[in-house]
Length: 277
Image 1 (tube, rainbow, N blue to C red):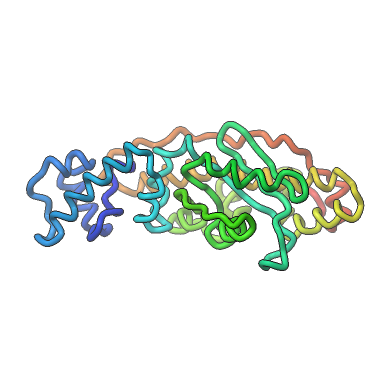
Image 2: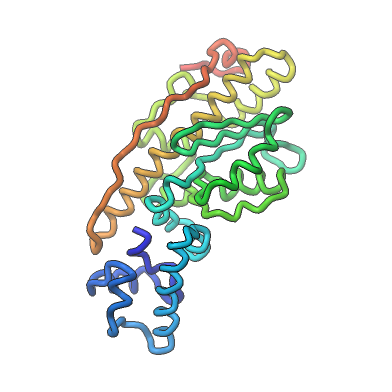
């Protein structure tokens, strides 16, 4: 999809891009071969140089360059190309406010391996590990997870960022992650009814009681939040692609959610006020 995208070029909006597709310019190569692109004269040179830059940046694997030039709702266009360099990330904290609150756990899934990080243990390792990826995938991460991470580690997450909240919204899927999961038939099993506030309570319970089941339940919840992101990203990519009738469809095979290696304790959840499903 990325080589069929023109929205990242100066002066190219949705209507112009669709005109290009309908005129047979289904890729950058198609457009570069034409001398009758319907640009305004003063934009023609910028358009041609933008195509050349696009080829160069893609060859260099520079996902961030494209991400910076696309709106939040269009970041899905990067997914197929950079999927195998993606980190699905979610954080849990002691509350919503910075700097009074701090990160308790982070889960990172890359499609192959799940890694977890914990305050007071290996949290600092996340700052090094995240640099290995070119595409960050979150749900509402632009407004919460990414700023919290950047403030905590004093680093800039300068890779491309696909925030599924804003990618799914134009498709009619609004609300929080659990609501979106339900719309796609994704079931959290014993973690149904657990939310971000419960995660705060689980951390407090573990800190106060030393009950390792509370920590594992928190890690199970945190892991669930990232393991669900990959199938949602595939759903979003395919749905957006279907909505572009001027282009031939090449949907991605739908993937399932990977198994969660952590076990939630129904007893601990009851102790913090949650009736597990």
